[in-house]
Length: 479
Image (tube, rainbow, N blue to C red; front, side, top):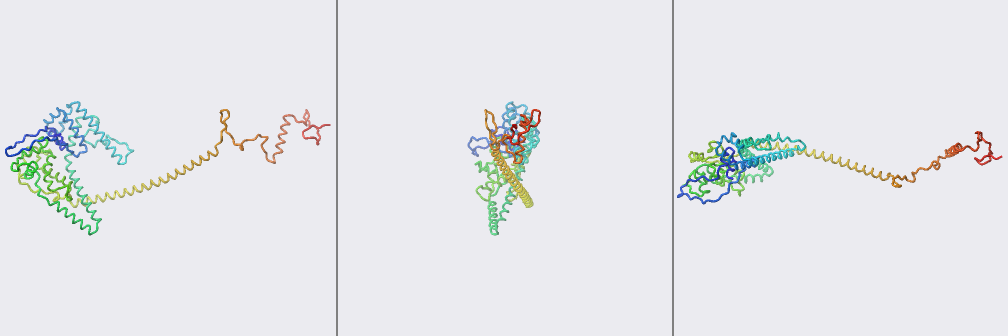
């Protein structure tokens, strides 16, 4: 949708984002200028702001735009009032359907953030630690984490202010990222040279200088936003006669979403012809990352020169005023990236020192991890040995149980342990006695029998009876 493109570039001007997509009438002398045939154009795609909550931001604005009341208020709200949060109060008057959808979007975003927090916790090794999501959600200022269920006025206010602040810092962060990219590229080149012999280094240096010279050999680059640069676009991109150049017509032609402003993407599109003079993706010497940095530099320069109220948009009035300035008519030459190195030698030295320190820390961690691994392997070997010993002991016990386990005899349903025959006990009278105790034992048995039955050699009064020593033992003596 046309309004989305502008909004995603800058939350400072929400009114311009949701404005009508109808083009502004073009004031042109039709006898001199051939108007291109009208073609049906698709609405421009939403531009990724680079913010980590870009999708959430776009979806919220998408649904707010569907509410007629909010849209009308948006057109009648001053830009400063939007920045101060006055527009957010109109959220109370949007339809129930839109509010319900906004609630759902917020719950999804909170869930996404919680997932990210948990994933980060897992990566850092805190799997067993309890995660305080409420405390960690404080770092995300673009929503009210204390109420994770419904989208309220405070949420819209936070979203507008956070996006405004983050987008203002976005260009600065991009420049720093590009500087690190350039220093890393140079560092890797220097490290590669160290691996070569003297002849190899000489050839590599010659090739490097040749590529630099070849890249710098390009047509003159016009000063971004100057009359010469815009006339070139007018002639080559629009197919119009440069003698008929008209700033207002030019503005209306390139205000692709028809909202009455040049946003950052629309401005950057104007520099494509200039960039094609310097960069060709098929050339070894041309770096496309550098091309995007050059585009950013050009856009920033024009914004600084033309955007009078610093709202990150160029209105028609601001554009027309700029076209009357000396800088527009007689600009200075434009210095490209190869004429302005992104870093100093001091910054390069500090960068390499930082890389060396990082490498040293990584090596120490690697050594520590190796020691931990060796210790774990040693402990594992000990555990394996103990496991084997335990298994052997269990197997030995099982064998003993099998050899000593008594058999069972079932008698009328009752299990009776069967004692091996050689272990069965004999009756007392059949048990063998030691030789020296056999006779006394027999005598004791006879004595016990005499006592129980009455001794035959005793009279009834207990006196012993005389008997013939020649008689049979135990038989009474006959006269």
